[in-house]
Length: 450
Image (tube, rainbow, N blue to C red; front, side):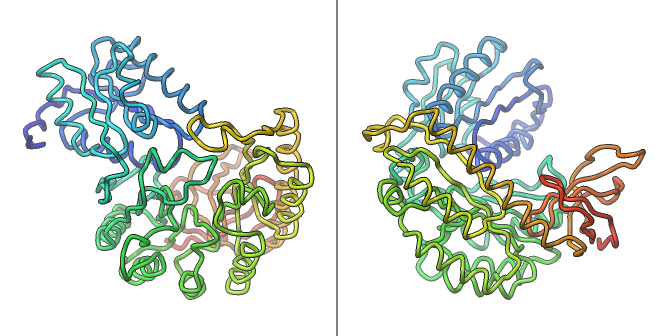
């Protein structure tokens, strides 16, 4: 079907509900671009719609449950609309979802570029469509462009799909397939398109972002970073959404240290800092290897902010193993942690492990790590009092004594609050930090760059 044939359907409306991660958010924006080109209007969930798309999540059993709840609610509220489920849970449980009366189309984590054709086919036949295919056989990255976002200050750019790691707690390889990297020319092209649309910062994202290029012969993440740095005119900031310690190669460190565009912040998930727990998780590194990578990074970039993910209460985790994690994090001085209690995910090896940890113990350990994270965040921020940092104002914060405050992130991922004006949103401003209050550091603008 020629998409242009739909351009006069201006009366058609589409609604999106996105669950889960930043990749899902990116993909919802990409799907919206397809419908926008076809003349659809995007409306909120409380409005009447013609097509309702639920982008589902399956990372936990709760994600599955929430996805089903949203699907059923959409069907109840929009009995005449075409209801579509896509995303990770749709990929894992397509046939099961089609058993829900009123769900019309199920498409997994591929073939989203064919959604308009599916909608047209359903309009003609009124027969449910199950478009889920075996994701493990997919070898090519699905090209879905997003030329602009509702966020005016930073743009996400998906560069990679899938994961080859098969951690014992994770279902995602079965929902997303194996690693497929985006053509570097396409990454550079869309980066330039985003910069031309006014974005100063691009966040490189994916399911296993640091794995970019492992399916290419002679082109890896370090090469892509270097090309973005040199070839995209007007780009001010490159941020990597997440990178595994094993993917922080000497080549990546060299690019980080030489680039003026790659920011002083890396998110490096550790999940646990107990070698015995890491082995049960099937993580591909030891704590000493992780520490060695962090040391190399800090040598190359002394003020680097390193944030991380930690799973607490993995099956069999003893108090001693938890303390190994706690003490390692304290020693390494991460600047912020995302702490998650372990959650059983049906279909993963860890869900069947014995010695599941009691919920109360999990929650108590989570609180201890959150307290430590807050302490480490304050210690990191304290180092920059009286320093001038580059910040991109994002949105209004609040009025303080009649002064309008705005907030935004510095290049090293400190959340800053400072007096500013609407004209500064999306520009790079130099802000002198005056107080390191957690979670918002306070400052004053000393110069607007552009």
